[in-house]
Image (cartoon, rainbow, N blue to C red; front, side, top):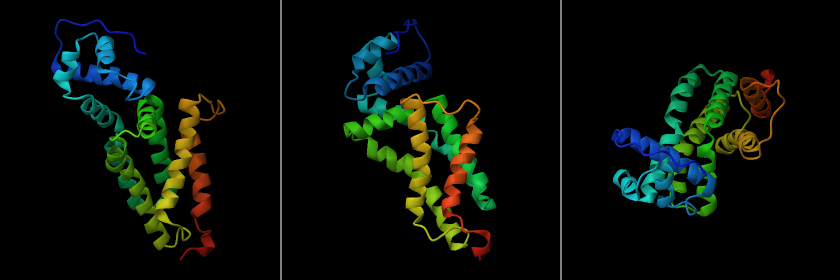
Length: 212
């Protein structure tokens, strides 16, 4: 549980909103949505509950704001979308894998929040998945579909193949961030991403002689 912060006499509204989001995110990621109260959030921020509700009309509204702030899906897509046109499979998938791994390692809160949301059956879990995580899945599946049509990939089901790729990344991150397992010390994030991608592409790429 994050320690209470000293309440300043007055700070800008945007700064207070950011402070509330960060403290609430830490609490939600430790206790889940149901296990965290707005009173606890207020105590840790160092303000009254009235201040929390001044910035967020409901607890659900605060949770939504946290997910929006933590998702970073647009930033990831801006980084990888231009690479799709080059049709360099290894570069595209390695860049995507590196982005996801590095951003999750820098702030694993989102992963924990999503897991809690799904396990609690929270009403916000499905809309968040549709509007955020599904973007990456659809981007990957469309790229795979195009590469299948070009004869570069085997005749695989694009969406299932996209899930397989994201599943490899997710399992790696779960081991590291939730179960605190450490890969060999000599493996950099880029090397880890390259090895995940190499394994994935080996399974779906056609041998050079089989491409049209």
